[in-house]
Amino acid sequence: MNKPSMQTNFLNHLQKRILITLGFLAIYRIGVHIPIPGVDTVALRQFFASQGGNLLSMFNMFSGGALERFSVFALGVMPYISASIISQLLTVVVPKLEALSKEGQSGRKKITQYTRYGTIFLAVIQGFMIARTLQSADFNGSPLVTQGGLGWMLLTVLSLVAGTAFVMWLGEQITDRGVGNGISLIIFAGIVAGLPSVLGNTYSQYTSEQLDLLRILIIVAVCIFVVAGVVFMETGARQVPIQYTKRQMGQKVFSGQQSHLPLRVNASGVIPPIFASSLLQFPLTVAAFSPQSPLAEIINTYMIPGGWLYNTVYVIGVVFFAFFYTKIVFKTDDVAENLKKNGGFIPGIRPGIRTAEYLDQLVDRLTMSGAIYLAAICVLPTILTGQFNVQFYFGGTSLLIVVGVALDTFRQIEGHRQSLRYEAFMKSSKNSKRRRVPVR
Image (cartoon, rainbow, N blue to C red; front, side, top):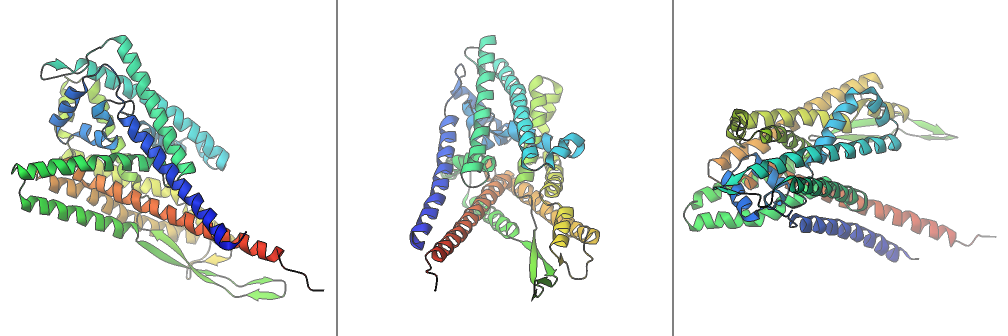
């Protein structure tokens, strides 16, 4: 087999992974349009349209419009994200789970299994609360549920739990067999699917003189600023110089090499905003227990995207998860130990504990900068666009997720291409060695 044909086969393998990803996302979008029977979907959409930019609209955005259609995918990936947050927090607190996380792939599989069980448990609770709330709710005097009762509630809870389990499976399949992070891509697909209708509504507001040209230009400028800021910060990294000592193998002495350890400004990616948004689902669940209670009225009044209470909780959540997730994905002790074993060191820093402490300081500074950037991108555009009566899709969170997930997916595609080229080169070199005729 010659080299061009090898590269063609490897490129076909990459194209297959991309097509698998697109296929699973298409299945997800089809499921979004499969409604659960017994609900007046027209009245439900009107109800969501009357809510404006509250928490319900935000979760409807993350589900790709599945919530307002009350489809089998109405819960989306939020139960899975909530279960992932809980499992990662418990991994730090519970010694048994911490020991499992250090057992390698087998331990991670067990933690993943626990996360799946937690997802189903949370989906049952959230599904019951949604069914209970819809059955007792009405819009303009007409009930949202046309055929209620115990049977309908059981059917609804079962459908929502099954839909959440299927979406979780889709995300895992995309991660394993496709390209990119499956859960992030599902949220990405949901946001992008809603953008055309939002652009159409904005144009309708412009033609009906509800929005003037100046406001639209300001909104476009904010969007361009957010996109440019995300691209600039997501590609930013601190290059830490690494020096390797001289090594002797037999009679040969290899001189010390110089390299760099890249430390990203935002090592956590788009995970903090997603986790913080999932955390904000808790007050909405609490309000669903008693929609007519004073607590539910306070939550629906003050927990509005762009409001001071919402922004305060959101910023605290983003900063916390930025530090928390960075500590999970980048362990400075392990990095310092690996450098020491391979004869590497940071110039002017003693190997071992001092290197770990030095990296801790650098990572904390970079994470603080990344957390401030994430909080600013998520909150400031929402406040600005809120002044111009624009739908929540133009908020910084949605743009951050869209741009961040797109950049991460392109990185992984490029990583696959580089690995495929390397494998093609190694196989071609092995084949050329086999074809050599020994000299006698």
